[in-house]
Length: 106
Image (cartoon, rainbow, N blue to C red):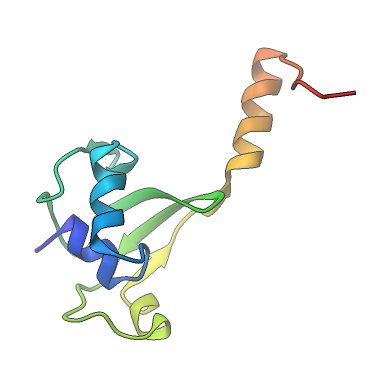
């Protein structure tokens, strides 16, 4: 088991631990479907994490807990991406569901 803020940094999902803590404090991260608001929350192998990265929402399954922050290729061996989803597609589907037209400037 490892703190979630440290894990996000070790897996290179965030550049620094401070950025991971901010994502968690703003309740942007979920563990097994539940919002995480405490950066000391423990996560382990098999947990499913959902978090925004750039313009995508990443859903990953933790396969192993890394011991140190290594190169990106090594970090990616510790998790599996389950469902990458573009925020643009999510926004478009939400607008379509509510039949809202996005604002466009002339």
